[in-house]
Length: 512
Image (cartoon, rainbow, N blue to C red; front, top):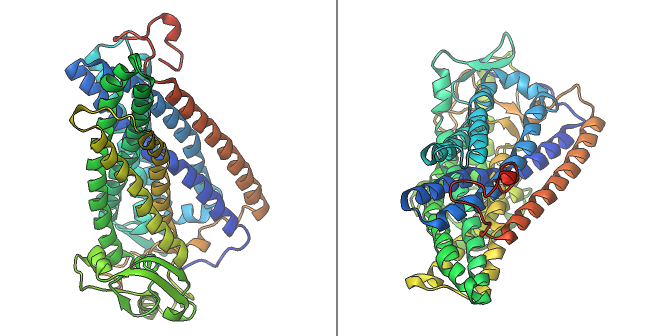
């Protein structure tokens, strides 16, 4: 048996997609920094604990403030997502709730309580807990944050590759195949490749923030002369180099994880990769730096600019001679798949679509912007490490300006990566779980995006809430930026004792 797609629900579909897209992309701007910074702050505090060097304590407190700002805004913006599942996307939730709800429940009931509880103990534990106990608190926060990410990515990855599930014709819903299906869901290769890429790219985001701020303050303090030169050399230089070395490691791992994920996408979602390379007809192994057009008239309506022969074959299959199929081929394969499903059970209505490929230009350019914007972080690391080699303290204003320019780039790169992941799954909200590429599988689970929207929520209500949330998130974004800017400009030399706040009046202040 297989899923019978529901009749398309008109009205609020586009508005519901825009609302979820706006709120999710904004929330995801904050997520990578929270994931990466939780680990790096824990490492900095560990370095202070092991070495006793004061600059590690200062770095822990300084970047701990920025982490707290980001964490708070992330929680505020993330709550809305789950409410949308039950309201704007109630048909989707009804269909997949027995499976999709499990990882979300683990995230809310386990991971979120771990990170929030231990974060509170870390904030108010300075001078009250022993150094070892206090250090353990921030490591528990890092564990909670990263396991929270794991469950969320697991839920999303199931939508990309819905393993361990079958369609129940009696209830008209997807359900677990058996007692061991949950382990199949959390063992989903799509999930673990996505987790690998998310974690490494999050380290890049956090390391860019540390390196960028460190370089900017190093140059600024060094040019101030006097005590500023000492601060630049003894505090900001080692902090900046820590961020840059983490950036080098994270950058290499991000490239590796992205390469592995790209190969998996070629196998599991060939239409996404075809759109990402703007291949309309036939097959190709060439990587295009730019492309413009559509596939309305095949290859003739698509213009490719600057192609690298064989590069796509290596990206997709580790073979410079390999090729991948274009949109026309993947459409034909998908149509044959659904025809075969219908032939197995004539009671199932035939399912046809004009195309099974996602919007080509959005998919193509989001893929490239993700990679191109990440290049700013790589250049910052290389330039900064060279400028501070052999004990040097840079006074280059050009480097300081580039450090500030680099700060938003990995945030944007991560956001475009998320857009590529989600747009590339269209027109499905649950992509067909096709084993062995595009072979026929009984009890296949899939759902068109248009069939997941709620029939009970009128379009005007979705439109009103979309406007309200957009304005609210815009306001929160301004607050986030101003807070991050304020505490960055304050600098690192807040006078506090090593084992706690300088006086009781600071205990509940943001300076903790």
